[in-house]
Length: 149
Length: 410
Image 1: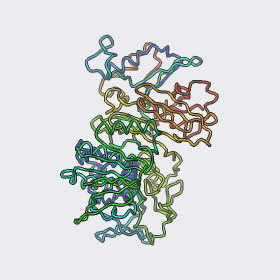
Image 2: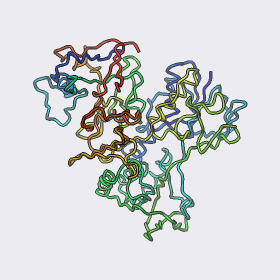
Image 3: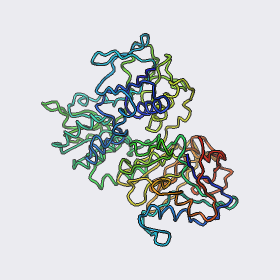
Image 4: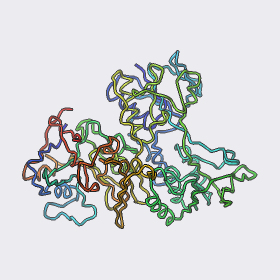
């Protein structure tokens, strides 16, 4: 399956991946028009800074044995047998957030505005080419690679 | 090979999925007493009329057809013959198996309070059938009483409020959801429920119920002397593993079906998973047990080791909470308690000797999943030398270079 591989040494914390993710999920927006004040403007990835180790960009793994899928009470989170990615169906979701609790890497989060849905990486599977975050990274700190599990 | 699964909730369905994904040719038969597959964690959405029965399913519409699983619904298992490897159903079918998974769940429990068990308008809130019976009552009932303010009782209460009933919740302990919350976080929910019309009677006990001429419980008497009127009563005072049909089969039980780490019972070829084992506790663990039992039934070896079950999330009226571990330590445990709060958030960490034992995050719970790993693995954080509230998975980051899968560097 395709996965976003991280090279933390190359990350300079510019947050382009963040903005690109928000924009990709804000219909009709681009890097210049994206509304970051919109309560729905939540990125599916994040970058943490550590004074010793520098920047660390973190992205959903679409885990092989995905804890979020195993914790889902509604069938909203399912592993796509073809892509291997964990896909999320907002209409099925009951917003119980067991998945948020069970994601071992703290990647998942509830939506800020309504607390009725989940903010989760969809690998931009509805868009051509690579995920928006990868395309936006000027340092090539993140790259899509085919991994065998 | 033919695998029979008793039960079609988290553990049973997760097992069936796992079997079919790995060995599509294995014959799988699911026997369930319910009419249709549904998620019991979403019953309140059905009773509250936000979703219909199909809307609280947690499988694809064509799940059984597309995966080639035989589905015997409305079928109760009444006996098990472990020698001849058959199960007997209420309609007198003998169904043979090569391997059997017991995932029959648990049943709600009605405490032996005078008048309560006899009342015809007392319902549990466990299966779709319970919700359907309550749904019918809601068409005429005005006063609803919920006994028990745990998660199930609060789920029932929120749905009954949604239906416009006057709801009174009676609870023995001094706060709502006392297994998951501390006083402050519980008060926040109680207040929200009260704003939506609910009344609470806490630290009190039902002592008797007056039953009317047609057999319906009408007045609920409490230890304090209070009396509460009821048109319908929901009992949410806990559940008991359901395994009556194993009597005489030789399966070892102790208030639950006993299993080893491989989820096998004392009888070869019979496995158990989910609430019937008494160690699932919550949905994610039941799903995981179903998966592990399935893998072992197929001849692989996988152990159930990720047993941590002191965990929950709560979302009522848009107020979300994560609760993990020991959240109400006794003074003699000598735990350190850190609190951080603002007008939208209440966060509490319970720490002992550098190890976080419990967490409550109320409000924003985004990105909090890593705490479970730290708690269940008793990770010593004293060397981190950092504000514990600022921790994230980034502080433990490691990546498998071959697969990019994350690991914990601890």
